[in-house]
Length: 440
Image (cartoon, rainbow, N blue to C red; front, top):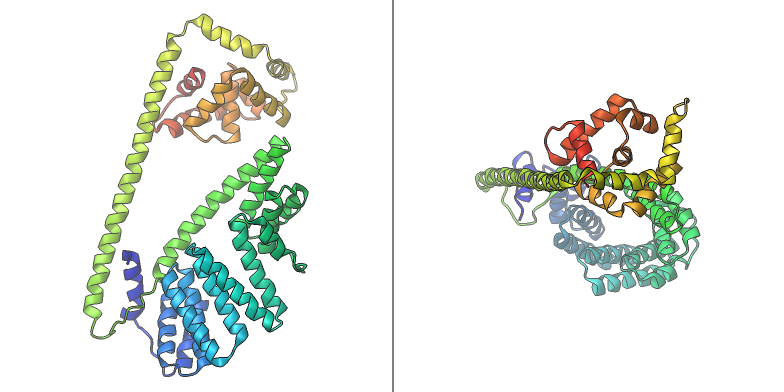
């Protein structure tokens, strides 16, 4: 078991534990803890309720909630055991609807374990039980879950047959997600676009993230590059937000892992405290190693980039001035360069439009195709940063770049210095960044 798991499983036992008189009291306390987000204490109360309960209806509820908590904490084996216990209790009660829910929960456990045959088997069993009771809402819910499974495995025909056996009376986020996925990957892009637009209005970050990703793919296929780039930028922002949210949730969930092994709370406290100390020490050691490895890898990356820079600058400085002038001459003969000169000569000091930037990037792809590729090997640039690099490559001065990008000359100089630090891990001057750009 992981050190974090040991640490957090023992907290409720060492500092309070459960103090209840009946199984129903324990279950009520568990529900309160679940509402408060205290998973370790909730699981401790659920365990007490399960040990004391003699009523099958209470047992079914207790084990079902226990399975859900364990499943959410990533303890799949224990969650499966709990769902099976809930299923047995519902069988004893003759509660077919409860049995159907349990079968669906078991199917989802097998889904996370990539046991495909077992997953489909239990979903089919759940559907059969739901249909036998004529519960259309439950049937629809299980069909949607099974459709999601088939979409994940790219079996679009089976997913389609499940999603269209009924009309969805609501456009819930999950339904929109599955329909957008289905239409996008079966070539029905108008319908995919419609459901992607609905996903963009969802509060859930993950749904909006996929909506932007699929919209970008659709627009790229239609050669709407500018709009596609905007969606890709939103997708990257949401991806970063989702990663931060996931990291935060992981830290909170550390305290929610639960150990099913039998422990005597009173007689084993000393041993448990020793385990806590060992677990904390282990975790701190692992964190230290992780931090050291991270910074070591970062330093190595910077060192490699600096070596690349030295080679590039050495080759660049060996080139005679005529060779460099010839490269610049090719660019100055392009329509976009002439357009830029007209903008710079305009007394109104206009900046470049989105179409101008698009044409400039296309020109580089055509005239100097290796420049952008080599530039992006070093860093993932923002749109503004990339624009500055393109204009530097054209040989423009900071004041001109500031006009064309609607920024001050000082802002352009600051960005160039900052880019050198971000890419190479050390302070640099604007001139050093310019020389790097020109050397590519």
